[in-house]
Length: 75
Image 1 (cartoon, one colour):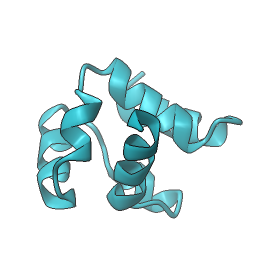
Image 2 (cartoon, rainbow, N blue to C red):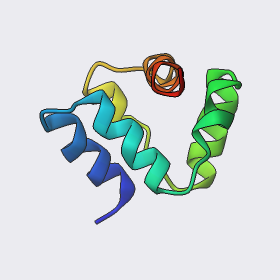
Image 3 (cartoon, helix red, strand yellow):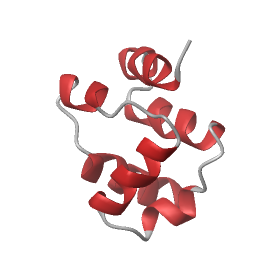
């Protein structure tokens, strides 16, 4: 199962966005780094890791939503 599939399943689970952030963290991406970069840079970084971002659009989410959730989690 790819990370994109896992993100889709995580979004459908009770935790929703929290699970998405958790899966990103589990993939080895430093959450602190995510909180300090813009959406375009994050897009490039996630695509380099092989993460399919189209799942976010299908869920009505944006990378800005993910960045905000990461910031909340780190606070």
